[in-house]
Image (cartoon, rainbow, N blue to C red):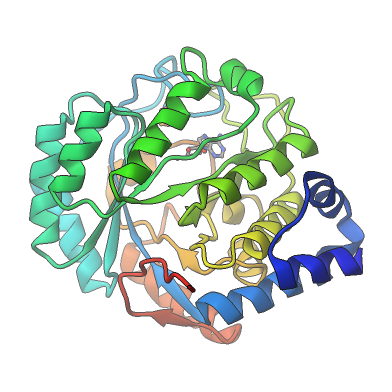
Length: 342
Ligand code: 5AD
Ligand code: SF4
């Protein structure tokens, strides 16, 4: 096992079966995470990139079985921020010192490409990098948004197991998902993808396939997180994902994609307080503090108990800076584009 970790640390490549054995082996988790931490230090440094997350609409036309925003959930409060509110939150993010905002929503058709382009153009004037996380759109819309100045796009593949995807994401297709990701890449976005860990029916082998997909796609960013059951969804009785498996996934992703920007996600922190700090010591180098406020922030309920919902962005920022200091890390003041090594 030690030699496998060494191989991954030096060559940044592993076969599917080697990945499977690392993911299965919880006794070597510490050495695995330590190797990932060294690779993170060597390739992306000790700075932690902060990206201000703005959740601007909880309307969604999709019906993903795991997600609280699914169209079949009539209990969740739906909201939309208007253009001014979104731009104001971007200004607030800038005042908090963040140089990137992530505009995230359900798949909400009210926000036409035209409406979104206007918002992107206004935020770009604030000299912020803009990341979109708004789901699947036609190629042309991705193009308009890119031309309006959007820099990055997050679209998780969720799982590379096409049958599992079909089961948990009714009416969606794996082929469409791949088309979107390829379009985004061709249009020159920095592209982030990722998966949910612990979906019912998901195997370790399929998680290894996910990692190989991230590598072959050469993802600029990889966001993963544990599945957390939501009471208002068909998966309410399913067990949550295993946080330690998430940490091992994260570590292997860092070993195989040394240049990628990898967030320590809120879902990790929700399952285990301090998991975000553990993630930062297992390969992660990005945190996405939530800058959404009040009722909107409460209502954006993908899963229950979302960490930090009660904190204001200013407080979140302060606490984070303190916590980072303790593990020898610091907030990096940059827009945080991927640095290519050769
Ligand atoms: N638990 C954890 N993550 C979830 N997401 C949606 N529902 C859940 C859940 N119940 C994730 C999906 C989506 C991202 C925005 O949130 O992976 O891509
Ligand atoms: Fe909508 Fe995204 Fe939730 Fe699926 S995961 S229901 S697309 S918000």
